Length: 396
Image 1: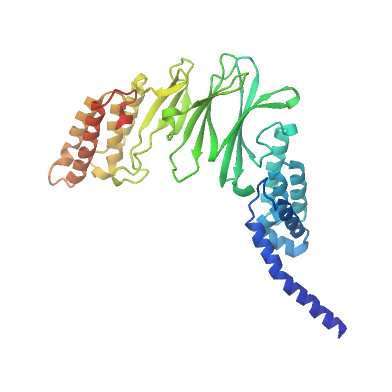
Image 2: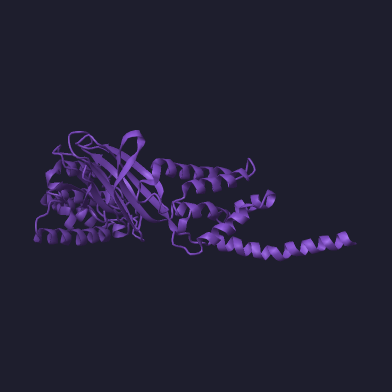
């Protein structure tokens, strides 16, 4: 009888504790981890206590509430305590069964922590100890022969482990020194979904390297990006704003005319879903910019052949026998690239001739053809009335 009463008492204690454990799970799952969080120590202790649970209960928690268990190692990570974070996470992994579903994911997380620890020994970095995870990196050689590394840093929201939910990103330039040591020269961070290293120009001893980077704004604009160029020098990098490039998607960077300055090929926003076309059916308008006297300016007029070639490529996708709405994107692309090449008169004549058959009554396309002409020709007239531009179609 005594044994029965004891078992019932123990069952009652477990039953009473279940809601408390559930509350702890919920609290830790929703915890926002930051270096200035006053409750960080308490959150760490509660998470670590959950992690001490063994057997089946721990294995189930790792699937249903992984974030709750990871608060302990992540609390160390956001404080810059990488070794402690590694040890905490390694302990959790060892507690998982060999074939457990979370074992691979946590092992990848452990690799990221190890990479962050070994990438910059001694934490000689302004961003390594602020809860940032290492992202892409590239190395360049400057005119003085010195070697430099540009490192992208990513910080997930609230110390989370999902790098697709970035709240801030950083870019840091290091000088590579002997024995693998590095020295931080310059660091920049901002509210952004992340930085992308688009390309490197003038790499090698001939000139200071120019590294082009883009950052995506934290917001709802999928096609918006900020573009900048860094001149990497011994005295520190020089940051050149994207200027007229900001808000555009940079498709590539190269020294097209071999003058030592980079050219940027960018896609202009504003033509997606043109005339209710689908995104992939819509016309695309690209432009070329270049760096002149530390300013990024339009330079399409220096590369007219490029846009004439784009017009010819678009023409290959045009079928005069197809319904106009099916090929409208290609038709408009031919027109736009002819304008961008500086041939606005030819573009106007071509467009009128191309749409003449569809404009006739009974063709079934007359309304759509009229809408295209009524939209594009006034844009062209307004462009001509304005100041000449290096990329004429940018004003359409």
